[in-house]
Amino acid sequence: MSSSINRRNWLKSGMLLSAGLAAGNWSDVLAESRKTKKIPQMLPSGLLEHEAPDIPPMKARLLANENPFGPSDKAKQAIKDAIDTSFRYGWEGKREFVNLIAEKEGVTPDHILLGAGSTELLNAASWYFALETEGKIISGDLTYDSLIRTAAVHGAGCDRVPLTSDFKLDLKGMANGIHNGTSMVYICNPNNPTGTTVDSKELEEFCMRVSTKTPIFIDEAYIDFTDNPEEKSMIKCIRKGYDVMVARTFSKLHAFAGLRIGYLVALPATISKIKEYASGGGTISATSSAAAVASYQDTDYHKYAYDMNNKSKDYLYKTLEGMGMEYIPSETSFVLFPIAVDAQTFRKQMFEKGVGIQTRNYKDQDYCRVSIGTLDEMKVFTKALKEIVA
Image (cartoon, rainbow, N blue to C red; front, side, top):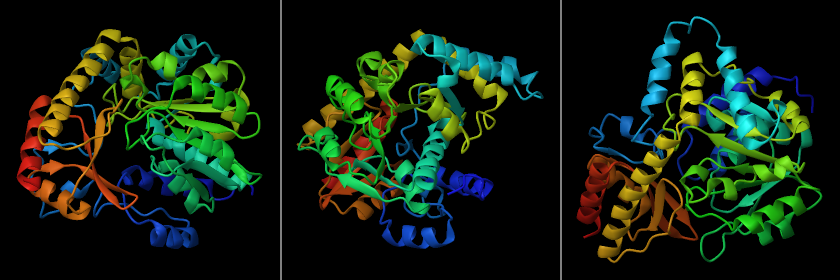
């Protein structure tokens, strides 16, 4: 299909997907969306549920995996300094940011595509593979669905591979599931909403073996929360010339959820194709790119945010253990754990107590996914949790 048809409409409709982080029943939604080619906003039981008129003010906003400890002071100062020249488009700042990434990752600037957060880049890749290759995507059964949902709206199916018994993506199952109609493999590592990672050596071998016949898209939104991000990242495969795409976002560790900036690293030929469906960084403000340059180099802040996240997460672990509740050990800024209460009822009761969370259902078991907040927010969460499950 020609990439020139209604691309502006796709970009416009794709912006609505940014609110679509909620779990839900997508069968009817997608059936209708395929007819209209429009992506509906997901407000009633999702990310923006706390804005409903009958929901009390939020005491603990733990539903969007935002970093409550930032941005860094250096990023804030960079924003202030950039305001005076923000009447210009700020291409120089974006070029500086790209060059910094290229130098750190050992690639050339033409390996990098900027976007307003990773959502724009996920959407761009999904549109390309859905509309140009017209094949199916293969991914985990329980994973972050932004790319998959967008591709589905434009007619691309998805072959789902169940997770392993320890809630990790099944690389062997994905490799075995690839067929002639597979256009791309999508891997979220660390995975959302489970918080688990796959073994980095196994993933590297998977990428080198599978990408010779099928492109691989790896969403590394939470890689900075792992104990060894550089070792776990698959950008190393791109340096070796493999057809792998790695998306990064500043919305998590860097605390740029509202500032909106992210980037994609891939082979130059792949970047050229996906770029046709993205803004090429045009949606990023001059202030955001200036802040990104500062935050990218602020390693002291990276450690601070990492340590603070783990401190709050450890508190949550101890609370759940003290209540006799199980949880999935997480290498991210959120934790998934099973609940005995109906998901919709549980979510509503938590919101009524001023606590925003998300829920999932996997293999007929309901789960709570709670973002890691400040220690005070985690105390609000655990107090509400105890009142509900007691």
